[in-house]
Image 1 (cartoon, one colour):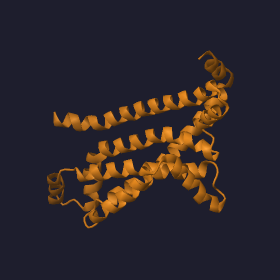
Image 2: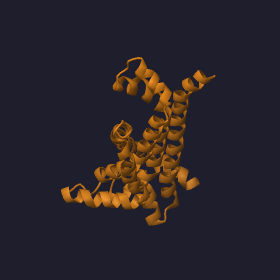
Image 3: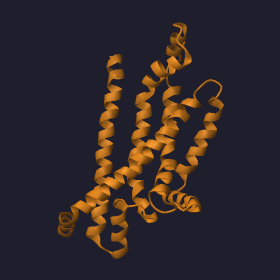
Image 4: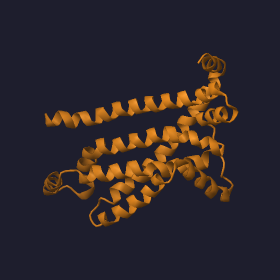
Length: 221
């Protein structure tokens, strides 16, 4: 461990830069996944469209089933057609595909879990469908939806390290360099910050999730 701390003390700026790049990959891909999965989850819970929820979930599940390294390789091969097969572009594409399912499934579960009696009462008060969605359904479903977002982001922290295999600078760069050269301090300089990022981000999102759930809990007491 002495060699590890020696490496960190002499190269902390480089490790910090890779940590920021790692976080960039995670949050850019996570943001895009949310922008795709959240509207899709809302869409398939609307009357007349629920029959498509199984098809959409199955499609998203395909990318979750395929090993993450294979998804990254496929994304790299696909974007190589337009000369973007190396670096951030395929890494972000792969992570987007890999993190859609948790957000999508939790959005569907959260919205379908809203008490039908509450929705009927809102209709009886003369609320329009979009008012019911934004003022009743989404506020009640937010804790479940947020749990899916938390899962997607935390998974991406670990999976993003594999982006180093296609030339995207991140903490995985140190991990794979350490493995290829048999340099344990270098490997740990990438692995330990990656693990710490996952723990810190999970704790942060757990706190936010608790804050979102607390009003509902207090309301039931």
